[in-house]
Structure formats: C-alpha cells, structure tokens
Amino acid sequence: MTTELTTLLVEIFVALLILIGAGFTLLGSFGLVRLRDLYERLHTPTKATTLGVGSLLIASAVFFTWREPGVSLHEVLVAVFLFITAPVSAHLIAKAALHQRSPSRSGLPPESLLEKHDGHGAKPRPNAEAKQKPSQTG
Image 1 (cartoon, rainbow, N blue to C red):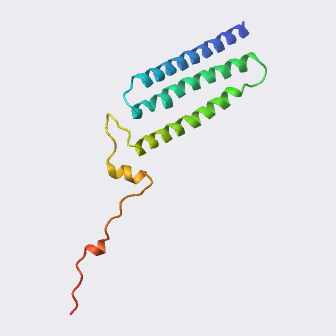
Image 2 (cartoon, rainbow, N blue to C red; image 1 turned 120 degrees about the horizontal axis):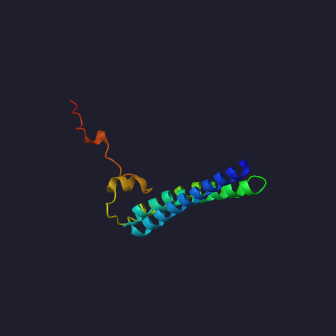
Image 3 (cartoon, helix red, strand yellow; image 1 turned 30 degrees about the vertical axis):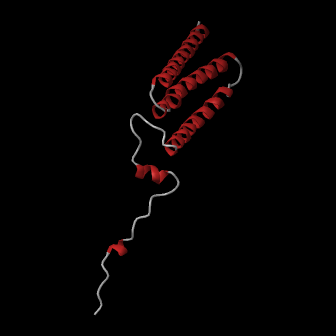
C-alpha cells in the first residue's frame, strides 16, 4: 500500500509539473504572437517559455529517476544549458536592436544613452579650463 501511495504521489507531482510547464509555454507562445514590438517580445521566450520548458524537463527527470534505476541527469543538463543561454541570447538580441535603432512603440532611450553603449563612446566634453577666462598679467 505504501508503494502504491508513493507511486500515486510521484505521478501527481509529475502531472502538476507537466501542467505548469505546458501553461507557461502556452503563455510564452501567446505573448510572442500578441506583443507589439521586438523589445516586448524578448520577454516571453526568456521568461515564460524558459520556465515552461524547465518545468517539463524537471518533470521528465523526476519521472525517469523514479521509474528506472539511477539518476536521470540528461534533463538537468539540458535545463542548465537552457537557463544559461536564453538570457544571454536575449541580451545580445536587445543590444543589436538598440544598435540598429529598431523602432519601439514605447520609444527608445535618449540618444546620449544609446551613444554611450554603441561602442563609439560618449561625445567628448569641452575642457573646463578652456572655458575659463585667461588671467591678465600685468
């Protein structure tokens, strides 16, 4: 009876993880279609869909660890790779879009901020000494 109860609890836990993962993945996909511009669309794959796929991978790892002898680490390695690469790729896409000045419905940051992060550096400021009046010598 104890084995049947633990099996039922593990199956319920795996089913909940699958439902949560499917829900996040669906929300992420829906947001990718519905949001207006590139900057808003970056959030859904990096947040909701990553959590959804991560939950599905954890459910798979729990299920196969329970059913087979040994620990199933394949899914854990895929989840770690996903959690590392998704934010990095979103960051690079956002930097490329800012560099190209892709239009945004919410508006781009001010030009001074964009110039600072373009790699060209900020425009040089005039020296404070040049603004001072030369002293008169007698």
